[in-house]
Length: 388
Image (cartoon, rainbow, N blue to C red; front, side, top):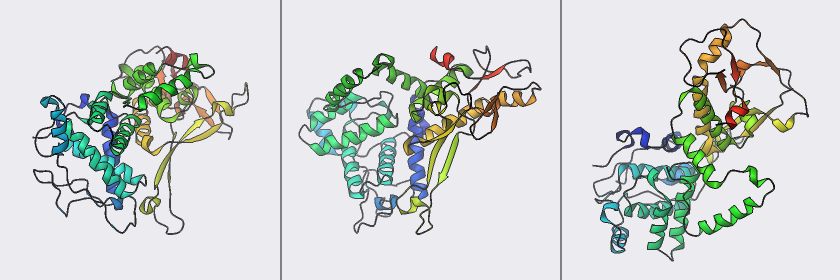
């Protein structure tokens, strides 16, 4: 019997993987498409259950591009077996597991919503279905060797290589695997060239090594922080990764940094997502470090758009920290002392409670249940993060 995500220990699955599936589910729901696809024991999808991929982008192509089967490609599985792959690594049964089916549906939803031609998405789906016909690993367990081993089965098929590029792109850019970054044959040579170019940049000694960067990303997205200070540092590192803002700009993010905007098509008056566009997008309000004059203490408000694929992760990170710092904001409100104030270029007066990343001075673990009025509450320090 195949497993569902709820039947697997939550600690084994990256949170970003759950977010990726949830975003895909939302894309289907927005377009009135049922996420659940019923198929028989052989993996064949009934005609009244299959997806018309055109609906994800309101595509008006004449012929439908549909998902018709989650059956395992017996030819591919047989080819892997004949190549000497251990039987224990190959999937059993005639149909892909429910988890694999859900993952492939998520890729279809994301690709089609990005405006990729429905027939191209269907072809990618078929090729990725072949990939999962010769591995019983969960998507978040895949590594570079899995991609290389599969490519060795089809050394001359460019379409196979292209589909692996799509798979690796989703796994890496959405941090879906425990082993990111996944790099496959051909891409390794390109990455080597890019790494050499990076090392030649001015100030390259200030940049982390690729291994250090990947390990940091793995930790802050997949490990559990120990105490409040670690939670704050993890979130700062996530926001640095997802937004591209400078460290001090992230540290000084305001509590109301999430700014959602809705988009309406001016011709039809409909949400833009219903006619192939994007109905809702996220931008981050921050205080630009380079926007201030040298020595000036006035904070200059600025905005940075968040790529759609990162929007949910950014939102969840901010909401998590708002909840974690709520006791500190409550304590600030109960304190009678005059807080440190900050002035913005628009003339607004902000206090410490108006910022996102708050910590309790000299508190190394979890926040106490009761915060005494004499305890000092402050914005997370840049130096504290660098010592992490």
